[in-house]
Image (cartoon, rainbow, N blue to C red; front, side, top):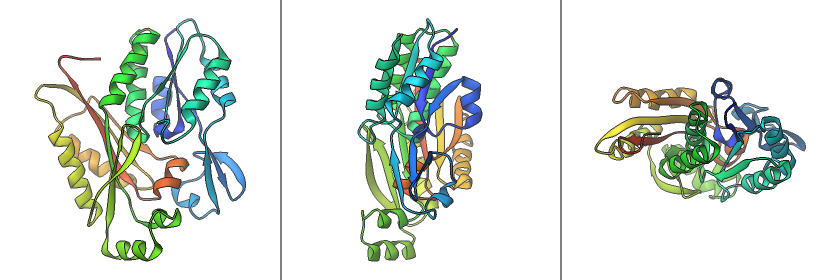
Length: 279
């Protein structure tokens, strides 16, 4: 037996990787046109045309069931979406308490690819035989070092949500304005926009290059997208052309993140493992 790893669907983990690393995923819930469905029930393009859309964190009971299903003498680690972005973490804490047993709940202070990389690092450490405290410590360390920068595919969802006026959104889309954002200390922060997605990707890659430490041991990356797999593949290919990552994955946004950022989002999450702190 090994430490079990549980997360929520905001991590945007590919299903094949979930199976390979035996990671349990608790779905965030969506209410689409009055009907409650799981985070991945509809494709991104379908979500925004299906009717009024809202999101809800998994209930404490959902986390209780997930923990109980995986509980063993080695314990369970639950890794959640940033508590500053969602009540997932609070639900996980309550659910783990109800489940009993040996469980640690960690707020990754991330989402999407940043959260995914912390989850993967924890799951890999668990498979190597690390105990619960060690696996939790690794997840925390990765979570503090990972960077996630993305670009919106359009201004449409910002207009729908009331974050920007519709006239400004239409004008920006005509000009090809593509807002960039990063996830920092659990919050989504806006960066200066680019004129198109290609330029935005160039800026993201520049940030990745400049972050390289003097003596890296390994690179871990996750390209993420919402209905834009070709953009995620392109940015990952650009990374691989310069450095072969130890971890490389492409993850699609679930409905909860699509509801916030819209369709066409793409971006890159990464962290550098150095020679002085191999996991």
